[in-house]
Image 1 (cartoon, rainbow, N blue to C red):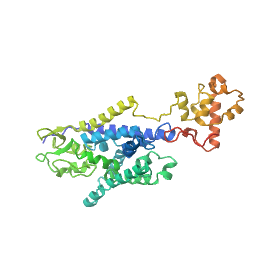
Image 2 (cartoon, one colour; image 1 turned 180 degrees about the horizontal axis):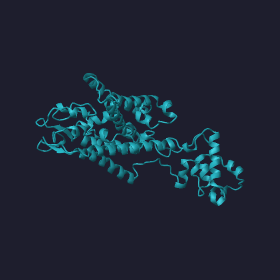
Image 3 (cartoon, rainbow, N blue to C red; image 1 turned 45 degrees about the horizontal axis):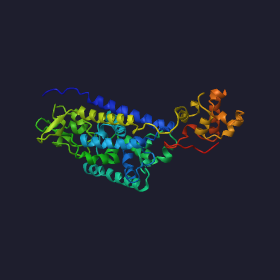
Image 4 (cartoon, rainbow, N blue to C red; image 1 turned 30 degrees about the vertical axis):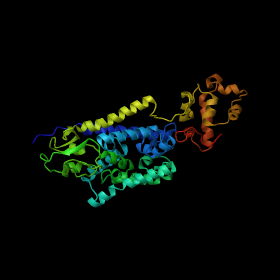
Length: 399
């Protein structure tokens, strides 16, 4: 029997998944630091699906979503038609988080567990009513009703005072998904994920599928043990299940070359084998190209649009960003501090002085920053949170 070559596939897949997990985590933390950056919902394709009815009926989006979520939804749908649920297996950071816990559990326990067959099959259908319920509620209320229960939103509020107050159930589901992942591969993906349910539908007709060569198969069962979705790959000539996330783990685990491979149908009704790297790399490349093109065109925005000049917009990060090129009018506009306060404290007697730079006034920017900080601390507020949910607004009115 020919020796199987060592594949770079796992390393490439993990580099992609780790990079995306780090990127989305940074975006989520940036939103917590300053509302200049949109909430994580704007970077989740399910948000685009929730906004579908509002988009059709009112040509608008639900609060907290953005065109970026619609773009990600369309891209996920497109890749599902080609590579099936490759988004779930090779892009989704929440799925990868569960996979990391599963890896740790496997190292500790030296085995993976699965629910009894009938119970497992029944629970897998649960994600479909979950999807329908939350889509129905979103379309009826024009609100993202899934947010309090969403483990991905809860993950991005770790360390925030809102975590248990607003996302208690999402936190519980997150903990169960991650801790449960120590024993059972990707439990949230299998049983509850509404995005997985949505992508399972077009993936049924997706082109790239895993095919098994029964003649060279040695029935070792390694492919079944490697599958994070617990599919019986060794019993199928072709993996047609909508649960397949196209991660390529079964192909990598197979010890016999060319026994398991991705393939697409040809006009002669034969199947042409495809390298697993093409599936994983192709999925990532499609997302990368779409995001690059839409970012350059301005359709995909990585931060909230404020309409402010850069010297004014940077003040949203907090008073420590006040510089000599700012004016008192800038300070009043962003922090909603009454002009009379500055007039009294700085002995100003003309309106035009508010439009001179601090350097022009001969005022130390650090002095103004300390004044703003002190006012907000007295009011029990954070001056970095003067924007609410990605739109312009101010917390607490004028001081």
